Structure formats: structure tokens, C-alpha cells
Length: 630
Image (cartoon, rainbow, N blue to C red; front, side):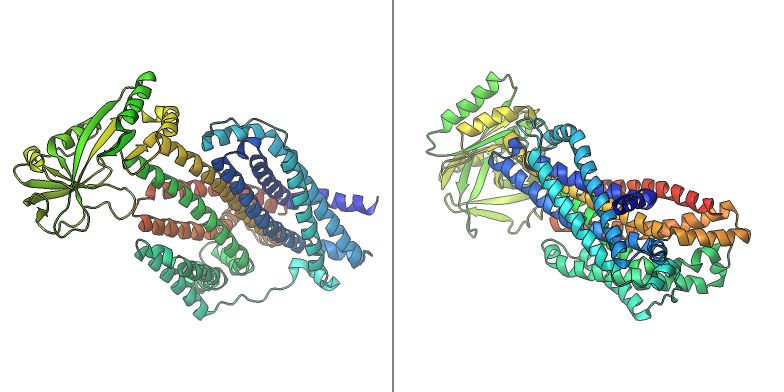
């Protein structure tokens, strides 16, 4: 047997330890490769929007690559710790330190090579399905046909082969300072009593409570200003939470005899403080990585909801055309819109509203005035509930354009009770102020006879609306109209809801697609970190429960103790991350004054459900392996 075969067999013999590491690495390679397939796709390399998507995918690849490096390095350090005793035995039987480092180097290269090949192969198998999924998410006009991604394969293979070689050199450096006696002792070396500082424990609670309170109190743009200091405070507080406060709480529980001596709590709490202290940095890292994943995905989903809600709620009309006096293109543009709708057999309801612009005493800008009848007709054409106005004499109603996002959802202050028009020397009386999305601008509604009396005005314009019940079916038509009618010039403005919605959907779909994949990578990596750390202590747990089992511990009590201990170690960092994520999403809600409760529950609930399934899977295997030793 050659030395390379010996190293290869070592990987096969330790497949239980390396399985999660191999699968996680394969997943990271697969995600990187899938991004490369999209980024190099011929259909995404042309066009301004598609080119931006391609650049975004390359940027996502860079993030995944950096994160994969940290992830693999961390995983390898965990494996080396579990195998110290094995390394010590090999050294006792004559293996030199150089041969030991060479063996570890070859093992890591073997795993990295096969993980890279596996990730690329799995990515190729599912490539067509992922391309079809991306077509629907991105809502691309051109189909993403399957192609053989030579560039993507080359980039992925070279990038990850280099990554695993660099990691292998790093692991060799880690082993350089170990002595034989340290290797033989392995993880069995006696541990010192974990200590917790009262001051640092209190500081952890103060920093977390202070950070949460600040994030939840600030409103509007102050949220953005407070983001960096609050994030810094919470990160420091989280570190002290795991390294100090958690140990302090466990030791405090151990001092309460009513709890410590109850049933099997003695076994449960006896080494929980040691395990919490040993794994504190891992839990801190998992909590922060999970928080990033929860917050990033929750924010992306929330932003998407806000964007489309703002777009569809700001106007009930598929097409709007506002024309100023002197617009020579008015008849041509309106005729084109009607012609296209009729040629495509699309039923529509057209409404016309005259608008007079009058300067008001004491106000900087002119006021847009419309008649009561035309306003009510416009509201009825939307087919949605609206407040029908009924005015008399010089009564007026201020109608402010409603915006579901931001701070303009509530009516502006009424201010003066009267409005003095400069041109006609007329004084109007405010009846009330309402918000509505019927008009794209703020208007003042007056009685019809009053509207006729306004013979002197600064300027006059006409607003045309085209209501279409199923406006999403007019996307192709709206693209044709966009070619013929520019958005605006000095005489008119043209707004097409289907066209704008389609542009936003394509642009944001790409962002969401990229963000979801990155969040998924972070989440899977966080779960893998927990898996590695728990299985690092498996041999110690076997010995401990084997000894306790001889004293009379039943299988039922064993399952209960291990389940509670695993649940504490597994869910504490995830619970901290869920709380961090919930606070961050609530702060985002305060920033935009837009409810994200539904999106927050959906995202955080989905992650929690997946984590519960993952825990049940790990718990089952963990308990089975401990029972085998009894």
C-alpha cells in the first residue's frame, strides 16, 4: 500500500466524520457552479438589465467563495481536534511529523477534489431544471436554453481546487506545533472549571437590551443612522452572551438544589457549562451567520412586497396620460392607446378629467383643482370602493395622493380653514382632507358650478385614465406603446402600470434570486457548523454515558438527557439569531412605515421549521451512536 492509498483509506474509514463536511462542501461547490452557469449564460450577457443580472451573479459568486473558505477552514480545524488521539497513535508507531502533515494534506485534497467533482456533476444534472426555475423568477423574455457550460466548469474547478489546496496548507500549519503527549491526550485532557465574569455577563445583557431597545424605538431614516452602532453593540453583546452570560446562568442553576438534584438534572447540568464554554465561539459564529441569512432573505422578501404594493396601490389604472395645453401629440397618443387596446380585444374604461391650476395666497406652488362630478366619475371607473364627494357652494375637499410606503399615508395637517385663490379672488372653505390613489397627484375637489366660475387660471391640463381589470395581460401591448410614447416631455406624462411592473419584476427578481441562494448557503453552513461541533464531542459523550449506564441509567433517561442537552446546544444560537432577525425586520418596518409582519413570520417560521427537522435528524443518529457504546 502506497502512502497516497493509506491517506485515501483514512478518509474512507473516517467517512462518518467527513460525511457532513463532504456534503456541505459539495453543496457550496454546486451553488457556486450554478451561479457560474447563469453568469456565463449567453442570454444573460446581452441587454442592459440582463448584463446587470450577470454582474450580480458574479458578485454573489465572490461572496460564496470567501464564505466557503472560512467554512472549510473551520470544519477542518474541528476534524483535526477529533483525530488528535489517532494522530498520536500513528506517531507512536513510527510516523514522522512530516509524514503526518503530508497525510492530512493528501486527505484534504482528496476530499476537496471529489467534492468539487460531485458539486459540478450535481449542478449539471439539475442545470436545466434550475434554468427553467430562473426563467419564471426573473420573468425573462428569452428562454434560458441548456448549454454545456465550459467556462463555468473551468472557473469552478480551478477556484475550488485552489481553495482546498490553500486550506490543506493551512491545516498542515495547524499541526506543526503539536507534541506527541498532546496528541495522545487528545480531547481527554482535563479541563479547567469554566468561569464567567459577573461584569461581562451583566454587560452582555445591557448591550443586547440596549441594542434591541434602540432598534425598536427609532423611526424613519433614523433607523439607517442607528444601524451600524446598533449592529456593533448587538454583535459584542452576542459574543459575551455565549462566552460569559450562558455559563453564568448554568452555574447559577447548578447552585439551586431544588433544580440541580431533581431527577436527572445532575447529569444534564454537570458538563453543560463545559460544553457551552467550549462551543461558545462556534455558537457566536452560527448566531451571526444565521442572523445575516434571516435578515437578508427577510429584507429581500419585504422589499419586494413593498415595491410591488407601492406600485400597484399607487394607481388603479393600467395607463395614465396627463396632457398640458399646447400638446400637439395628445390626439395621436390617445388614438394609439385606444387602437392598440381594441386591436388586442382588451376591454377598458376611459375617463377624462379637466384640471385647472390656480395659485393660492400664502402657498408656494399652484393648486390643482378638479370638479366634483368628474372626480366621482373617475372614482367609479376604478371598480373599487371610494369615498363619493357631495359638495355645496364654496366647499372643497383636499385629496392627497396615497402612498402605502413611507410617511405619507396619513392626511397632511389641515392648516387654514379657508383657501384664497389669487386669480379669481374666491375664498374656498375646506370641508375635509382625505387620501386616495385615484389621482396621481394631490388635488382640490370643488363643486361643479364653482369649477365653472374659475375662468382665470395659471394653466390647464387634461388627465386621461384607462382602467383595465386584468392589466397584467397587457404587458406585451405596453411594451409596444412604450416604444411609440416616451414617458414624458414638457407637454405630457405617460404612465404604463404593466410596463413599469414588468421592469420592476425582472430587476427585483434577479436580486431576489441571488439573495435567496446566498442566504441558503449561509443557512446550510450554519447548520453544518453545529453538526460538526456536536459530533466533535461524540466520543467523550460515549465514554461518559457508558460509565453512567453501568450505574443504572436507563435508555429512556439517556434519551431524555441527550435530547434536552442537544436541544439547548442546537437551538440557543438559532433562537438568538431568530430574535436578532425579528428585531432587524421590525426596525426595517419602522424605517419604511410598512408592515412586514407577514413576511417576517413566513421567513423566520420557514427557517425554524427546517431547523427543527434538521435537529430531529441529528438527534436520532446521535442517540443511536451513544447507545451503541452502552
